[in-house]
Length: 427
Image 1 (tube, rainbow, N blue to C red):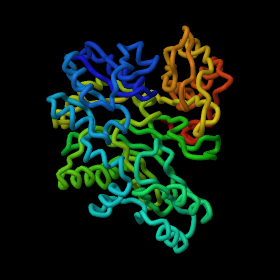
Image 2 (tube, rainbow, N blue to C red; image 1 turned 60 degrees about the vertical axis):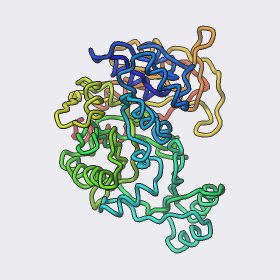
Image 3 (spheres, one colour; image 1 turned 60 degrees about the horizontal axis):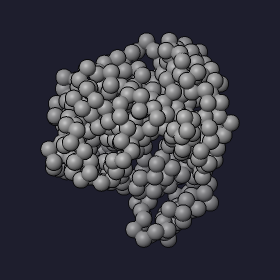
């Protein structure tokens, strides 16, 4: 089977790594791809993935049996719908179902309608009304842009001044909408389920580090590192997530005539009252994919096909439970703000030399034989270990081999998991 992988980030590098392990995969094309995906197939930077007719034509010309869509923007834009209309199988939700990620307000309304545990909330398009609501509620409080924001559209405001500034910044354009919600307290975790429109099977857990600096300080980002498994999620908690969050979401979407097929990635807050939904993503996470794919002990491709074909009931997608994975994002200086592109990165091959380390590339390009930084989050250095502590040590040892003065990373990725492990929790 020929596969077209849409995207150019570290997630897509990780998916290329996993997909090409399948005996079903004959050729892999990545559009646009990056220097990492090029090692697993052919990059097609010439294919404009926003031009759905061009993607349809490419699939027909190259006998594509499955399109795997990595990022959220093509999903929200309806690429799955347009491919399906042309008889092309694509993994991911329809445009209507992708509203679970594309509109926070949509998801909040679904939670309210189907009793899905989440933070109390209100939706606003009017700035004065939003500011009045803040004055009534006080801080801490959370202000979220309704639409896609690459992981940066959330402000956890510790003071009323911060919350008011967020409202003013987000409600500037006509038609803009925000969600203001109560601030939940607990530990965050990520839960992934493979869905076929009716059923779902759990396929792994992870924990992300959103804030840009050590100690969870600074602004939110697309993610500065992650680890898997999420040891805080016990089997009982996982069952609760499936029963109280995932299952009613699928039932609600089906009842609305917009059944959800693809990856349902639930961002959770583990509160004293049980797990609550923070938000949904409708695809594999980044950098979560970079810790899930290396731990995968089964064949990813048949599982994705089963979801597309509407029957995940027989899917067995095991993970290596004897190994932990931890990834550290190396970002360009200035991230998550403006960054300089074009700095030279050396030592990636040396960092990647161990069987237990994989350097997934994201914002990179090759020019004159040199690897250059070409984005905000540039590399994700992933390591495996028999313990989280071992995986963490290997990741940071690998990072020390990378010569990139213009880059930076957090130095405390996995600290909670390691602390639990030291206390006797294991992986």
